[in-house]
Length: 160
Image 1 (cartoon, rainbow, N blue to C red):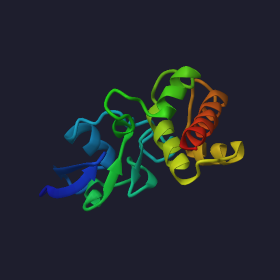
Image 2 (image 1 turned 120 degrees about the vertical axis):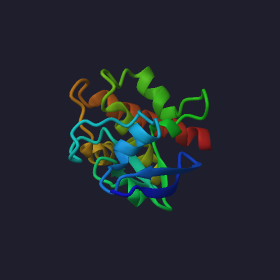
Image 3 (image 1 turned 90 degrees about the horizontal axis):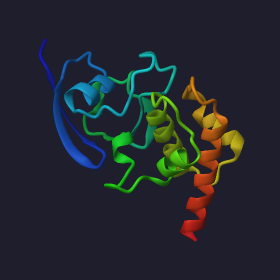
């Protein structure tokens, strides 16, 4: 089977890669591009561990074909920090111990950032609804929800 040439932008950088027509974006990220932050928790789009943004839309990379990235812009967990400076959500997840095993954490962070990019002042209900597609089997959700809400408040304060 012939490989497909894909030209895209990942975490702000132009990228070209070859993929099989049936290869998922998750597999391309992890195996072809060495971006192993996105995790495969289920392979069926039920857990959110592989969440990325595609043209600012939150998607499960396990459900997307790599070939669909052609001409699109993708952001992964690896693109959240700026060099050594963690994104405020990453800082708050650490500060509030909103993580444990780390399988869900990248997807939770990507999803939370997508929410705050669209809605910098979410209610607790909105955060819970937005993150409903991301499953955590270790920590429960209270610390995660609190970290997102606290980050949103701090980011709004910093913007004033």
